[in-house]
Image (cartoon, rainbow, N blue to C red; front, side, top):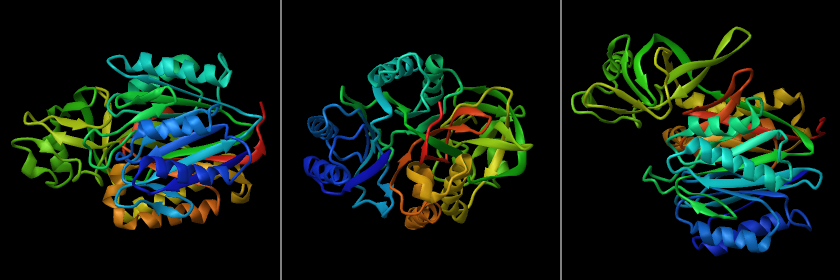
Length: 402
């Protein structure tokens, strides 16, 4: 397996795509076997897909929008919030496929169909891939995961992120060679010829404050321990959202360092938390989140710091390496998902995030994108959707054992 990346910050979509593709073409004398395209909102995604299709007609293409920039081995890459990044795989012994379906009002069914499309394109219908990579419109990620698992079961690692734009205005896109969408899901299946490792973590610490979601439905918690959820959260955070309580309003820019955690697995008797980012305080005292909370489950106040967010990317990369028990010199490349909310909170230090990854992985080609929700698999804890999370997938140079 060989992995190569390309990028451009040119303003015109066609020029940007050609410049990025030139970086891929320089890596080999044949077409790649899979291409991931991460680009910011201001590019014409249909023009980009048309050029990718024309240049590599047999290659599966997975397209998604990222928030403000991408990470590459050269570091944070963006020009005034604009970039087009490509990540490609050359693996003649492997198999790859991509499917894309509009979510409409049936996200689970759409995700299941996209999974079947991807398996068919890979020529592996009825088989279980080593990895599933997803990009979905924000809003119903838990149902998307359920739809994929209805096709492949619960043991296949599913990683990826919710598509993003630069300013949370709904200008995100998803796409395959079949077309582009603004409210869809793209699923790619990986049957690589090499072993993969992965890690999915948060960089936050649990606090003493916790309670039971006594009334909750989907992404809305109405009460914690029988009291209005927003009021309880405000007390836990020492008045963080006090000015918003009476009339309600958006709070996500204030709550990045104070999310709610739910235990979703255990490792050596240590709880593994998946985070939910508080989005809005409602006038009736309810708390709206960017992830589902089940009625009756315990929610724990979590705390993070800027330094913790900067360092955690390297720690997650190290954990991904440890899952394979290999050295950085034995890695072909990597994929990184980093929460856009976390990125915005530390944007002036984002190059330090890239440095923390480089210190672990060395000079391997990788692509990192910034998402409005993160999907990943906990060690022993299944596949989940969370917020303010990070995931890393590493591809080794060791032959896969089937």
